[in-house]
Amino acid sequence: MLQGKEILLGVTGGIAAYKSVLLLRELTKEGANVNVIMTKSATNFVGPLTFQTLSGNPVTTEIFTLFASSEIGHVALASRADLLVIAPATANIIGKIANGIADDFLSTMVMATTVPVLFAPAMNTNMWASPVVQRNISSLKTMGYNFMEPAEGELACGVTGRGKLADIDAIMDEVKALLSPDDLKGEKILISAGPTEEAIDPARCLTNRSSGKMGYNLAAVARRRGAEVTLVSGPTAELEAWGIKVVKVKTAVEMANAIDANLDGVTTVIMAAAVADFRPARQAAEKIKREAGDYCLELEPNPDILAGLGRRPDKPFLVGFAAETSKLLEHAGEKIQRKNLDMIVANDVTAPGAGFSVDTNIIKIIDRDGQTTDFPLMSKEKVAGAILDHILALKQKRRRQGQ
Ligand code: CTP
Image (cartoon, rainbow, N blue to C red; front, side, top):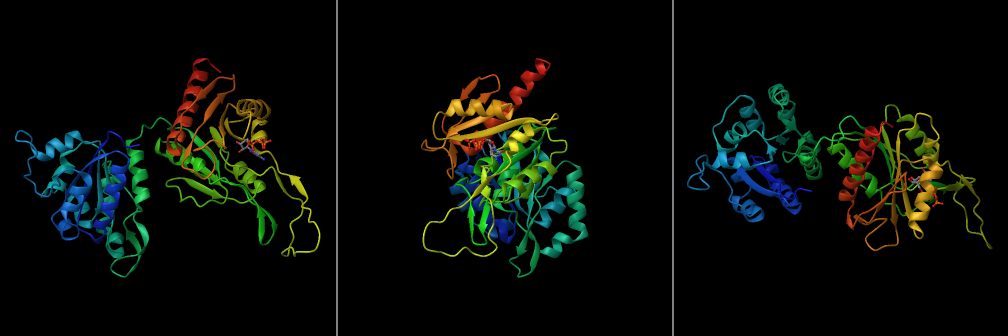
């Protein structure tokens, strides 16, 4: 995702400085070239050699560092970068930048750069709540600087409250958002994800192998590209999605109701959830006991959520998924017609690297007019990007054709 990107990572002097080592690892893992700038006090918490070794670049700590004889360090770095991230950002650096003080390399760099700047603050709870810090943050926000909200929890000083450095995954998501095009701005996308779960008795349920990874990736990538996203999710182990409205459900009927309640103004619905077609006809109030002989579980049909959306006169752009084990194109094509979809994402869940629980997928996208596009094995994050690209392209094509 970050291949070819130049990122400046500013590290300031707080106990959370060790966590920016983990952030650096994630940034480089995704292909970014990272140059680290440490304040003097940051070097009391983590040695510059750690950042230098992991980034493969010299670490800048002094204002007069020269990279090449003809280039002044901060100007060269600032003009090459795509993004500057300050993590952790102390109350001190926030205060200095908000008030135009440039007395070390990092604060000078912030003044010298025209690229987006993301602050990930970390400090003591009372400092975070202080009106001075809050005023500085709000004036930096009005000037166009970006901020992560610190997390709540137990802080190094023993106090519990807000002030912990935001989760590394959340910072990574925001970095990607700031580097993504805003081509989905104006889209309001509702995405369903994960399995559904139908109770048999208080201890047992009917469910399926869906992990929710495809739907969660779609939601994250759509949000980064500027869409307003609602995620209706069945039970999954996936992490909370950042900047997204998440509605948690269990059964197919709950999912149908949650989708219905969140449909206002929605331009596109992507049904990535693996909805159970049937549920137990009766739910036992007590745990069913083992008895001699066979046990027969009677099932009754669940609503087909997608087909219901396809019948609405005001139907949004509808995207279905077809997880198949045979006759992929035939089954997927039939589903487009039967459910009145605009496009369907088909995958053979038996193919290695595709389907449930893995981080990759191999998909084919079939349009309403029968056109099929094949994609190679890709990460579910990349697949999400390809699906969203395809939705945009189809919508543009229709607009051009005046449909
Ligand atoms: N779907 C739905 N409601 C259901 C079942 C499926 O909205 N009760 C949606 C899924 O989220 C998916 C699409 O319909 O986007 C196709 O799901 P799939 O299970 O493949 O289709 P079914 O119609 O159930 O067909 P079958 O199980 O016979 O393959």
